[in-house]
Amino acid sequence: MSQPHEKIAILGGGPGGYEAALVAAQLGVQVAVVDSDGLGGACVLTDCVPSKTLIATSTTMSVVNGAQDLGIQVGRGQARVDAPRLYARVKALAQAQSSDVAKRLAAEGVEIINGRGTLAGPETIVAGGQRIQASAVLIATGAMPRVLPGSEPDGERILNWRQLYDLPELPPELIVVGSGVTGAEFASAYQALGSQVTLVSSRERVLPHEDVDAAVVVEDVFRRRGMTVLGRSRAAAVRRTGDGVVVTLEGGRTVRGSHCLLTVGMEPATRGLGLEEAGVTLDGRGFVEVDRVSRTTARGVYAAGDCTGVMMLASVAAMQGRIAMWHTLGEAVQPIGLDHVAATIFTDPEIATVGVTANAVESGAEDAMAVKLPLATNARAKMQGFRDGFVKLFARRGTGIVLGGVVVAPRASELILGVSLAVEQSLTVDQMAHTFAVYPSLSGSLTEAARRLMRPPGDRR
Ligand SMILES: Cc1cc2nc3c(=O)[nH]c(=O)nc-3n(C[C@H](O)[C@H](O)[C@H](O)COP(=O)(O)OP(=O)(O)OC[C@H]3O[C@@H](n4cnc5c(N)ncnc54)[C@H](O)[C@@H]3O)c2cc1C
Image 1 (cartoon, rainbow, N blue to C red):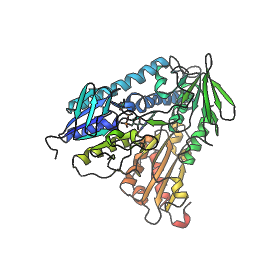
Image 2: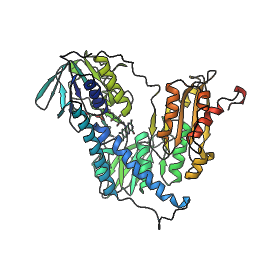
Image 3: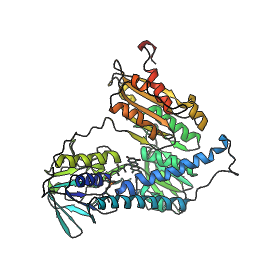
Image 4: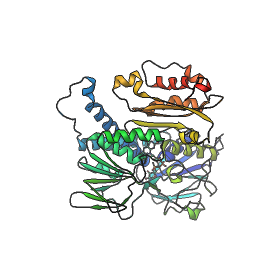
C-alpha cells in the first residue's frame, strides 16, 4: 500500500515511462511524467508505430499487386503509392496515438510536464523551471539512431528512419545501409511500395542474429522481388551528389541511388542528464545498468526501456517500467524474465519468434527436439496465394514441454501467440496437439507440428 508522502517522478514518456506511470497511478501514488517530445515516446511518434503503419500500406500494396493471381482484375499495371498521402496518414496516426496516451494518463490523474528534464541528485528532476521532488525516480529516456561517422543524415537524401515521413516523394532508388531488424523491415516495405531497393549488409546474410532458416526465406523473397542484396559489404561513407547519393563500401566499391537510409543501430539517450552525478552507473556504451527489477546503482533511481539496452522492444520497456513501480511501491514482483519474450520482424513475410532458438537446440545447449513444417502445403496458404514460410517448434526431449518456436508467414505476429502460451504455461506437445485448430488455417500447421513431435523418438526428424 502506498504511503501518503510518496511521489514518483518519471523522465521520458515512452512505453517504459507511461506504462510505469499507469501502474503507480493505479496504486494511488502521485506521479509526474516529464517528456520533451510527446507522450508515447519515440515508440509512438517516430519508430515503432510509424514504421508499422507504413508497413500496413506496403503489405496492402503487395496484396493488391498479387491480386491478379487470385482471379481479380485490377486494371493495367501495378498499383502506385501516393507518398504524400501515405506519409500524412503515418504522421496523423502517430499523433492520434500519442494524444490517446496523453488522455489516458490525464484521466488517471498523472501530472504531465512538457520539457527536457535532468536529474539534480537521485530524488529530484528539474524540468520546465520546476523541481520535482520524488521518493523514487524512473529514467526512461529511450535511444537515438546511431550516426555513421562522416555520413551524417541531412534529412533530404541521407536519412535516418525518423526523417522518412517528411520526404516529398517515394525514394525511387533507396539504398538501405544495415540489414538488422530495422533495415530489413524498411527494405521490405519500400520494395513493396515501389522503390528500387539495394540492401547493404555487412554480414553474409540479412538478419544475421535471427533464425537462419527464417532469414534465408526472407532474403530469397527479397531477391526474387527484385531487391539487390549486397552481403559482406560494409558501408564506409555516404556522400550526397546533386540529386542522389553515393555509398562507398569498404574496399572502395560504390553504390549509387536517389536516397540512403541508415539503420546502423541505436545509442542510449543518457548524456547530459546528470545520471552519473546522481550515482547512476552507465556501461561503456552509455546504457544505464539495471538489475532484473529495474534498479540502477543509485538508491531510489530505477530505469526502463531502450536507455538500459536490455532488449529494445516496446513490450520489454513497458514491463521493466511496471516492475520498477511494483518494486518501489512494495508490491509483489517477479524479476523480469527475457526467455519468453515474443518478437516479430515485420518483413513480408513476417518472422515471429518466442523461447529457445534453433542455435541453442543445434548446439546442444538445450536438450530439445525440433520440427519444421513448410507452409507451402498448408491449404489456407495455398488459398491465400503464398508459399514462402514455415512453422518450427522446439520441445524438451523426454517431457515434450514446448520450449519455443518460429513462424515465418504473413501475420506471423498474430500466429505466434499459440506458441507463446504453450511456452509460458509449460504446455506439452501432446496438449498442443490435442487443441482444436480451425480448418483451413495457418495455425493448423502449429498443431500439426506438435503432432509430429509426439511420434516415437526413432521416427523424429
Ligand atoms: C524503426 C523501429 C521500429 C520498431 N518497431 C518495434 C515493434 O514493432 N515492436 C516493438 O516492440 N518495438 C519496436 N521498436 C522498439 C521500440 O520503439 C522501443 O523499444 C521503445 O520505443 C522503447 O521505449 P522507451 O520508453 O524506452 O523509449 P522511447 O519510446 O524512445 O521514449 C523515450 C521518451 O523520452 C523522452 N526523453 C528523452 N530524454 C528526455 C529528457 N531529458 N527529458 C524529457 N524527456 C526525454 C523522448 O523524447 C521520448 O519521448 C522499434 C524501434 C525502431 C527504431
